Length: 422
Image (tube, rainbow, N blue to C red; front, side):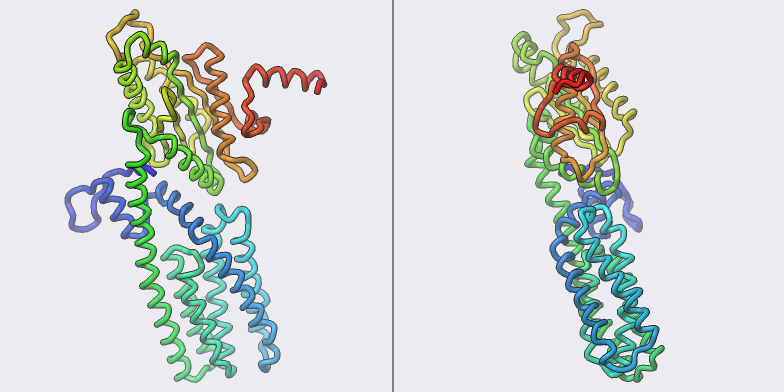
């Protein structure tokens, strides 16, 4: 995973700018990356905590139901307690269960879970305070477990966990005052609650820092493993991993994704006539040109294989993507690699470019976007090379992933459908 970040300055006394590596380490220590990199980290975080959040929120809903079912048997129950259970606690507990098991979890969890869990924690603090005031001090254990869960099981980031934890403690203190719990019991219970939460807070802060630093180190190691030595770009393995990651990110954030396949025209003939050293130099020059259009942190430029390159562009409009392809085509035409054997106006090198642009969805896979770009590249070659062809959502809807269809075959199929021939 390759990271690019601007040089930043420490907020206090440091006068020298940080290197990209130091900047990432500083951001990891502060528990916050720059927005594009933070979005990628969130994808990794959601994958890591999927199992524990599903287990915890399911168990939490069961415990909440167990708290509600025998409530009447424990003595007189106020209308406020019933409302708290039936209108706040149970609905939020069930909403969290639905959220973690939803197919749209990656898009919705970090958007809604912090607020739902903070509301649930505060309501639980009130409820347990009233129950303890009515003579059930054993329920403090339930509150302590939920206080620890704010940090260890709920799958939230540190700041959201702190807010939920504070809400739990403040609600418990307010509930203790409201139900006139004995002062000694109130203070003892609050001390136990704050001690367990403080310990969990201290441990979880170190855990999240460790995860973020590990994320940075993994990215640096992957950068060494995934870089192509000749072109200096990332390789096919990195492309496949990043495409899957950005597809999931685009689906969650509702952002468009573009894949651009770039193939050097007649490269074998170029190698045969000018030699392999000139061919290697041509690959390097084209790679440098491709890299110029992947400057943003989430954009990716790779050597896909042989004389073929690829670009992944995140969150750009179709017009911007087409403009990038046009500038790339023109930039390669202006390259002069080997001593000129042609007229000054005739390009030394040309490329064919296939572009696919669409909005990721749960119904399709990232491999379909790659296939769409591949079909667009084939169309560019069939149209005489040295040109750009673009396929978008309409082409994607009529495509079967894994089955390549040439433009000529697609045209024949369309004509047959219009004529009613199966």
